[in-house]
Length: 336
Image 1 (tube, rainbow, N blue to C red):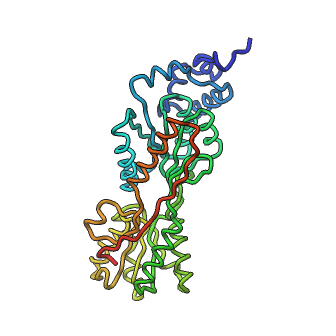
Image 2: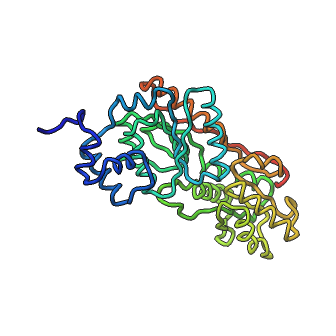
Image 3: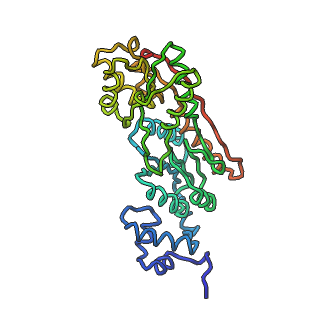
């Protein structure tokens, strides 16, 4: 007799996949101690059978506490840390614990998005700067795991965003208004993997748009690629700063890289901002202390707002989806 989906157990999944129940458990709970081929086979069986852990198991798991999960790449990057701080601060006065899952590859991301909705371990999920494909979005909705995306637009899920293209345009307009005509850009525009979004590429595009709108140009030699790292920015910007016709202003896609540019300029004897203006992006905590001009984005606030949206949807799943776009603004300090 064919079993209904209601009566399916972890034993049925294990038998169909030809593995032990402990292996199925590890797959469901996103354990790294499972080979890729085995994980894919078990996940295929789970999807085919429509297996969902029993409701009473979920109830037991949620009896004493509840969890909000955050999926994030680059966990140690300051911008992500500040967003997580906003999430954590908003959860302090609630019954929810914060569980962080770091993402290292597209397979890693897809595995979490395939298993987290069915485990019942989370009541809500926040994704920081990660792509969500249609299949994953459908699974999140099918299993009613309330989700908020930060920095990735989807009409069918809650989102909190900024306008990265607009931020680049704002940078160009500001530097040109200060009288600069030889403008440069520094940032990591390489492909960070199919799992992460590329806000830096969008900031560069906006910067180009703003420069072209003013009747100026951004030569390729004035576009410098650097990792999200102070020392790497120092190394990569040096050849550009040594040119006889070096730029008079540089827009850096992040504050960390802007700090590297300021350091190297001063090492080379360039006065900041008289010989070289430097503008960052993010307005990280340290920017005020070092006098860095930058474009402020509400990092902590984005985390707090994501939690607000999540909690309101958990309380009332019939609430309309929310799509919040947070404003950007120039913070002028000593480097421009």
